[in-house]
Length: 324
Image 1 (cartoon, one colour):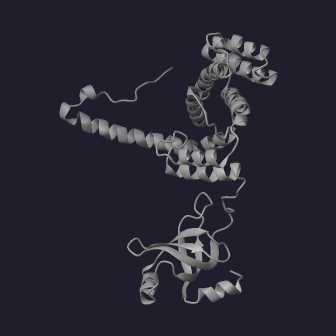
Image 2 (cartoon, helix red, strand yellow):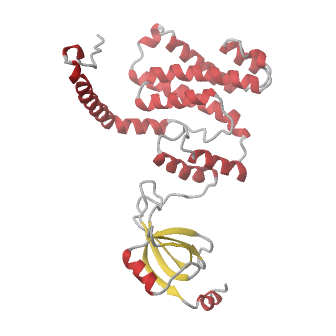
Image 3 (spheres, helix red, strand yellow):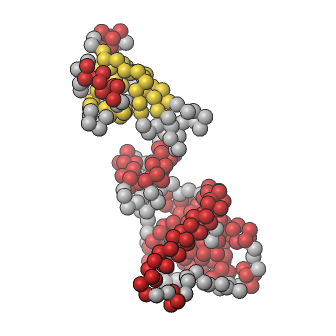
């Protein structure tokens, strides 16, 4: 049975009230969706962590758009749709690859012929051929809705969906990511692309922050997250004041001794602003300070506050003592 009554019979409603009825029902449906997401959110997140990563590709085509959608479908638990879309993505990727490898004449072949020709030409390995062909077979079973596909239970569909999704991403990574050597130039370009407002690989600002954190941890092998057990980060140094904005209640300071050149923006309380005014503290002055920050949900420092601040009038002598 298929029950498809998601809208009220608005023909029973006076015209002048129909908009209000629809608004009420849409609000109710929003609550239904939110409840469904809340009930399934743990499973969605677990499924996200089952998906392998390509990390980044400097050059892509439409097959990546399809992979993005397939990943979302897998996260939501829509396994049949995920399998179908990965099959289409795999075919588009192989067409892209044939052209990229100088074999545009293979573009109009069937998927099996195309992959077999590329294998015969020595342009792909046997492992890549096998992975692509396994995806083709599972996709065909799905799209043709063969009898053996119809009887699969949810666990089997989940296994197939994850298999084709990760297999295709592994194939793409092995072929295209290998050519993307990390340089300062393309690292900067990668960061700029992640930070773009219209970045298709981030749903919102928070995911952008999370991906910026992850990029450095993978590509630079640089730890960008504190331990979940660490509740407070404390830094102590002599700092030069680079910028002092009383109106916005913040200052930008630069480490001078322990971590020279490290800059951080620190919030100012009303009490500190009074101290700044009373001591005539201004830009390019040096202070001794202890600053603290509570790591946010990503394990990163976000807002910094002064725990202690003191104006230093004879920093040259102090710097000399440190060998500066």
